[in-house]
Structure formats: structure tokens, C-alpha cells
Length: 378
Image (cartoon, rainbow, N blue to C red; front, side):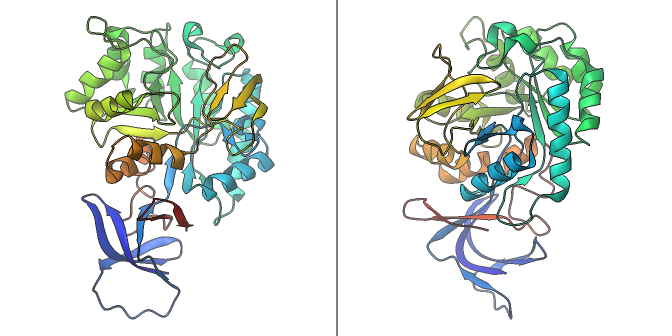
């Protein structure tokens, strides 16, 4: 395929370029005025921004299905809906569940990954293990009955069941054994600090042990105050010192205020923010009753809550979060990086996904320049 006349997202912003693809990969990137002899399919992208397809590294479900159903049908429905929303690569999150349930989900995901469709579906590239090594005090919508102490041995067993698919693990650093678990497994998966009541020193120690990610910043953690900066302060300090920390942001207009979103981009910079949807199965569905981690969730408009009012994920796609970030004043190229290359870097798949470069995956999202509506997902 040849894609011409579009404004293509690059490291330096948007540029008018011509893109050539072959065999599912980007084979050439040329100046817009370059003379090209080409006999294949030509797509005129005039009037459109051309982005890499989006990547969501933290969401639970959509379209009436939850990743923890652990079935090929559920994975397929989720992948299809995500693709329709401009998401080309996915790293869905599990919930805090019994050991044997997590093992079964991971085995099913590994089996699906081998036979998943190549076109018209988001590609399953990893799994985010959100729990069970979290704080009971900050469980949020997670089922506290299944929380357990960190175990490197269990993580290695789950990684074997997943056949290497586990890319990210959320862990509360204050729990005894957390730092040791991170050190033992950091070369085999990434660690994200979250669902925690840790202080600054505990968070800093976990970063030194190998963690480099924060799960849905602000949510399910102590606040950032001037005398007790806690996890947010430790992550910001590490970023200030030039050591990369990826801060997840649920920019759905519900979980965070406009000011809080802007503050994250100020603290962590254009390369350190990772937009996530944290969406659950009610995303793309009408209001009503759904579930998350075996707990009843009620969807009303843009909110999904447990019966006690606790927020239970979001009902907004990653594309919707991208639009909200732009609405909040984040420049499109900055918000787009936070939904494309940054999440890919945060889970170690940026060698093939997340940016428009020769040799990388030919997966694109075309947005109308006038209103940022989705024109085409390739």
C-alpha cells in the first residue's frame, strides 16, 4: 500500500510524507513530493492526520466482554471493538483473582495469541497483571479476598503459563517482599507501582529495585502533598533526575480533572505519560448492570461504579481518552505520543509497534484534521 498526502506523526511532530508498506511492515517513508513508481493500492490521506494505531496497556474489556472471561470468543470480540476505535495493539489487564483462575486466563491468552487474526483486529501483544500483589487498603474495584503477598516464584509460573506474554505487573511496594520480587523478575517483565498506600521512601526503593511505571496515577494511591509526596512525588523525582518513569493516566473526564491531567504532562514530560482507558466490559454498551472481577458494576452515562459508588474502571475507549486530552489543551502530537509510542516503550514492544518508521508494523489510524474523527483504521 502507498499512503500519500497525509500529515504523518513523527518524532518532531506532523509532517506531510508518503508511506510505503509491504507484507504488513512499513517499507519506505518518503518526502511528499517524491516521485514514486507504484502499482499497488494507493490511499489518498489528504485532509487527515496519519498516526500509528493506538496501544492500550491497561484495560479490562469492552463490547460486553471482559478479558478475564478467558475465552477465544471474548478475546476476539474485544480485539474487534478495540480495532474499530483505532487501537492496533493491546495489553489487557487481569484482575485480582484466585491463582488457578489467573493461570487459566494466561494459558488461554497464550493460545489465542498464536492464532489471532492479522487484520481488522487489535493484536494481543501482552498481558498486564493488575494484582494480586496489591494493598487491601487501596484495592478499589479489585476483590480484596484474593490479595496475596508478592511471590517471584508465582510470577515466574504465571509467565510460563502465559508463554512470555506478561509484560507488566502492578505491585504495591510497601508489601513485604515487593522489592525482592521486583529485583527477581525485572528482567522478565516490567513492574508498575499502584493500588498502594506507600510512602515516598518505599516507592523510591521499588524504583531502585527495577520498577519504572505507575498504575493509573492519582487513583488508588496516597495524594501528592507538600510534606508527604508519596508515590507521585517519588515518581516525579525519578523523572526529574533523568530516569524514565511511565505514568499512566485515565483521561476519561471522570477519573481526573483537567488540571490534574495537565499536571501529569508537566511533571513527566511528553515522553513519560501513558494514556490508558482502564475500560471495562460496559464500554461501547448501553447503561445497565455489568461485572468487573466478579463484582457487579453499574454503568450510567460516562461512569462505571460498584454498588457502593467506587469507580470501577472506565467506559471510555483509548481513542476517547486521546480526544479528552486534546480538549484539555494537550497538543495533539503530545497526546498522540502518549497513546502510541510511549505505551509501547513502557512494556518493551516499541521495536515493532508504536511509531511510523521503516521496518515497523504497518498499522495506522487516520483522523480527520477538522474534527479528529476516525476516518480509517489500517
